[in-house]
Structures are given as structure tokens and as C-alpha cells.
Image (cartoon, rainbow, N blue to C red):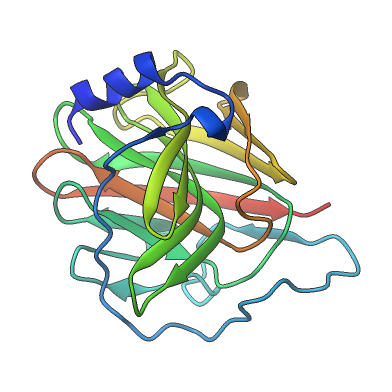
Length: 235
């Protein structure tokens, strides 16, 4: 997606409620079916709060590792990487768990990409993905390396922006590291960038699912994103 399209969406569809969300043509999702760890595809009954932390120093800590037709995900140099090979596709790596309400924090950066930094990377919550048909569902909280952010909802592979793309001075552009905090609490979705609350919206499409780290580029050529110090907590 070209920058002018994204700016146009920000100007014409700056909304907080999904009833008014603008439907957009987001990057096509094309992943091959690759064997992944078995995981429970229904909400788990947690009797005590869950607290997880991963600095990605252990490549057997459970995150997705794979090479796909459009990119790859895995561990490298004490970080988690998400790589896309060309524009207008998403690549993401899942944690293979299932949660309801969560608070997620992670350090994220663009390790390589186009000169104009026209990319998107970040966190997903309440992820449901059918590898057989290639349909992604869930909420994506993305920041671009040229200073924008968005909250996007995927339903059966179709996307709608719940808030964004909007420009923000809170974004550290280029290869700068950004501290992302995402809160998925009931119908409420909150997005913090480097300690600044940049977006708040509501949606009731999903109440539970997996978590994931995701990236894309809107320009020709490959791009890679790195993640570190991932933490997750439940109420």
C-alpha cells in the first residue's frame, strides 16, 4: 500500500468506533502450510493470572520458526525476527497459546527496509489463523518506521482500520527502537508507544486468541523487523 493511500485513510477515517471504520485493501496474506506445534484452539481456564517474559535468548522457548513463500520468522542474535521478502504481504510469528484479556509489551524496531521507511510492524492479540484457507483474524497494532500507527481488525482475512493510520511524534522513526504496549481488555483496545497513549478504541469481534509479532513493507524489496523483551500478563 502506498503512503498516499495510508495518509488518505488517516484523514478521511479518523474514527474510534468500528461501526465507522474504513474498509481498506491491506497487504495480501499468502503463507504456505508449514508444520507448527500443536496448540489448543479454545480458551483455557486460567485459575491464576499468567505472566510471561521472553528475551528470545533461548531459541526453544516456543515461538514459531518457519520459512514461508513470502517471508520467514524465528530467532536470531538474541532477538525474534520477522522478515518479508517483498511488498504488500504480511509475515507473522505466533506464540501458540490462547488468551482472553492480555497486556503485551515488547521492544520493536525495523532492522532493514526501504529508504523511505514505508513499513509496518508490531503486535497482534486474539489471533485466529486457518492455515488451510489462509484467513487471518484478530487485532493488529502496528507502527511504521516513518512515523505512523494503526489498530487494524482482521475478519476472515479482510481488514478494517479501527484507528489510523495516524502520524505521531511518539514514533521513533527509521531503525529506532519503539516500546509497544498493547492492552486487549474486553471490547477495549489500547495502544501505547514509548509510554504515550496514541489510540483507544472498542470492538467486540473477538474475545480470545493467540498473540503474534508481525511485519510488512509497502515498497518493493525485503524488510526485516526485530523484537526483544516480550512480556505478557493476564488479569
